[in-house]
Length: 328
Image 1 (cartoon, one colour):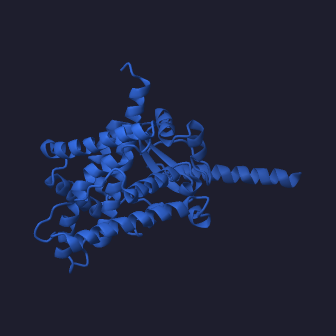
Image 2 (spheres, helix red, strand yellow; image 1 turned 45 degrees about the horizontal axis):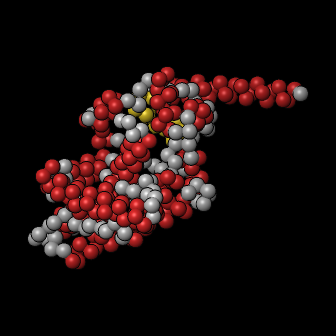
Image 3 (cartoon, helix red, strand yellow; image 1 turned 60 degrees about the vertical axis):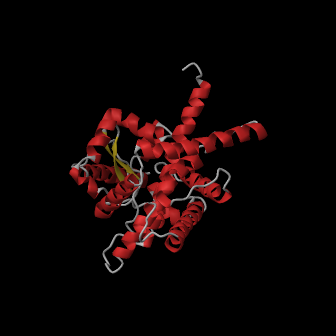
């Protein structure tokens, strides 16, 4: 009995010491909920909502729009309103944004600072500016140029929709817009336009969606404790994620090699890939150059996934909402 009491007292002392030391360590950080040893704020987040965005929003009502959270081994500052997000993205130090250390993201980037979405620092700024400038040169965001592309894709989409309704009678809305949205962007990126029943690209889109749905960036234990991703590859989703990442990387590499061998990119660039290949040739002898084959693969991968997933889900939601609320 005495031993148990002594252990409880020792535990209370250690816990008190931990809280004091934790508060001192993070005193320069934004406010946030109290953290527990090892778990951090996982329990508070999970108790608020099964959806991370809603949980963060609920907690921000108490701790402020800029909030510090610790999820297992992962530390994060969340911005929970459009104004704070806009402010931080336009801050001069936004270029120094922290690079993700999640093992899946590291594997996706070949363990280097590549691509647009998850990269950081000067490489991120350089690739972001190059991508925006090059896509605009080929008409992205310009009404006169985009109207033609959108009209052609819309015609293909409505034809596919009518065919599905005639043959199947039912159309699955989830993923319905994936290929159409990818085609609009992919014409400018690679110069390629896919048919609505292209099995290869449809399989890649399915794999990409499966990976995104399988990857949980907040409550997943392997995200809070990254070492679990390696220890339990099946349970943590590593096997599926790496299968998809390798398939998409291979597809992007085949795309750039096709343009390199079959397109007149040196004298007559017709898409984003062609211009990037020009930059690779121009800087080939520069060991510090950001323009490499691996960099192009990651930029293509980022554009492919960003162009399909987010926009498609928005369109699907809008369509379902209108169908349910036909009075609007």
